[in-house]
Amino acid sequence: MTAPADKIAVERLTAIFGKTEVLRSVTTSIPAMSVTAIIGPSGCGKSTFLRCLNRMHELTPGARVEGSILLDGQDVQGRDVDPVHLRRRVGMVFQRPNPFPTMSVLDNVSSGLRLNGIKGDHQATVEQCLRQAALWDEVKDRLRAPAISLSGGQQQRLCIARALAVAPEVLLMDEPTSALDPIATAKVEDLIHELKARYTIVIVTHNMQQAARVSDQTAFLYMGELVEVGATEQIFTNPREPRTEDYVTGKFG
Image (cartoon, rainbow, N blue to C red; front, side, top):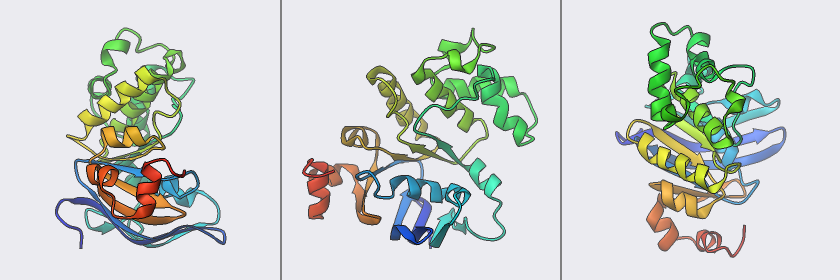
């Protein structure tokens, strides 16, 4: 059963692509209204874990999963779950900013509303989401400008605003600052701190310092297995597992 404080509960999750097991029997939980960081070396299954949470993994030919993922106690892989509706509840921001290049700033944010048939005052929703993404003051006079005219950091915050527009409950972030400069990275990290008051956030990062700065809980994956999960301070200062200590202190990875 999912504990009241957990938004997502994962039990014995195994992700398979063709004949290769990318994740093996991962069991963990994601607390609500908090930031969980997923760390580990390249190829350990971090992004696959993230994509399993909103069933994006199944868009890859030959992909399948075993085990369960419960969102508010409901199995997201159940036959009665519409993947499109699930991805509205569990939004995703990717490694590189991916605004729709032929659309304006305004249309980028409102695109999800139109595609999902959401009625109402889209202009007000766009402003609200741009404010939540700490971008409104920078683009309020450029709403009709092409989204690709923005800087890389602004484009990433625009993508965050676009994800927020459809009112998700969970926000997945796959290395959202890896392509950004230090100033833009700091703005996105500040934004993550602010958003966790409203959303459950799961972030994949290669940056140990970033995980320590932004997250409340950290999970360490290695070669497809969950080695350790716990409060971020504990993971970085007093890990239980030797492999965790070796990784966070830079002995490998």
